[in-house]
Image (cartoon, rainbow, N blue to C red; front, side, top):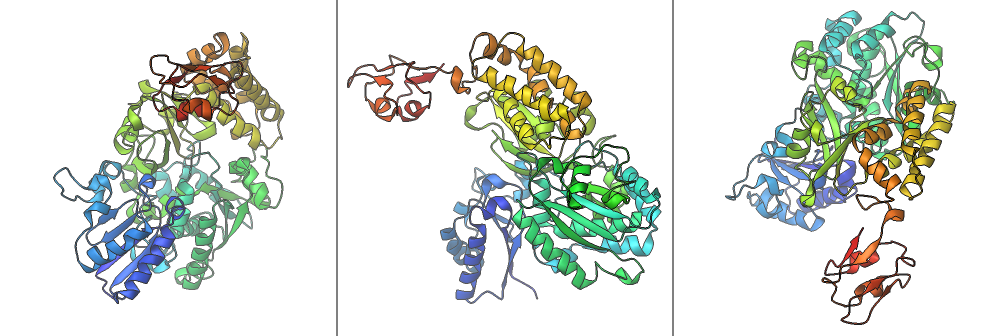
Length: 597
């Protein structure tokens, strides 16, 4: 059936938390009331990427990009656009409307212009619970090609030639991992998918499973054919309810259509898969801990070797990649390794998705060619730092990564360049910080996370990170002593060389990188008992600026401990011995007369 319009409503986590599914229901109800439901196809789509503009609706064929949509806006879109055939300009996202009032395609706005989508290609395009939508964009054609035109070795060679590296952490060559598992001889093999994604601020894998689950199913079936496995497992954290729900629906649909099960595409190949839910342990993102968890054991890392390619699930050869890695596979098989390897840099091929968050205008999900610079991501795609603040640092790689500064903004993003700077690609979290962030506090935040999430198996991680955190807490509370910074460095280096797994080995990275690049802030905390950014509460002192104070008494009324004294129309004074440094006075003063020092 030919529809007059296709209306795509974002069904990603960010937009659904802002009532996008209620907006979708309202849209369908109004279309039925107006008698035009048969003419308009409403699609619950995946994440469009620009989370800061959500909830988002895109109407085709015009490509009208409506941002920050409210339920009360839906009637206007239906009546004026879908019925009246006139784009509602006042509801369009601000960047698609030029100064002359003209509307340009949303693909041309800075956020989208430099992106190249491979892993996210179908997110925001296909219906998240409709396999027929996936089939319309060549879904399962790569699996068909692999089974009917290629040998398992051909598939592995194509992945090797593509240059694809693992998108979940260290960037190990994907084809090489497939080849190792292929060469392992055993009566049973498995394919596993790491969808645990526990880094703070990272949501790339979750967005793919929510918006394009069939690409992962298809890729895992291709991997099963390549290595000789007939069973797959997706290990997904239970905190991703939308991903769990939609992946479950997609697996059932794939079975019904014959893309999972026996005699796939009329061949003798059989492959099926199921989900295993994780309970939110960060350590289960480490491959051997994940394997233990799937087996029903406590999620704790195993010594390596042997690697999973030799002894993985139930001591059988197991291929394990993350969601984003798998999402690239169908495109590589369909379009060829030469096409994929033409994108990116010499040693880092293809694209990488990043979750852009923190102090940046355009927060959301982006996919850029390897080699794109930090400056392009933060200031062009991301739109720069809000409120006229100055860029200070960017944390890449989450708790396992490190901070990069202004001098690194023109660094091309690839595996090797980030590692050389003391950071890492990781799964793709990218947290932007401005002048108001305290780097000692940032290091403490990531270390608190690591200490909380340590499995406790090895002493360097269990005890060493705890001692590091105690030092950081002491420093941020104004109790730091000379030599504490050196103790932190020594502990960090010992943990890096002695922890059992990659998570423990990289836990000190945020501390080491912030000491390296912001040592002066550590020294100010220790030697001067001062937090230059004005963040660490124990080191703050609130003072009233005499020439700004009007004596309005609002600050005194807001103070919960009566630390502010003064008569009406007289300059007030803060008793620093009583002040609990809560900041209520700063928030209440309309004249900006109270400052943090």
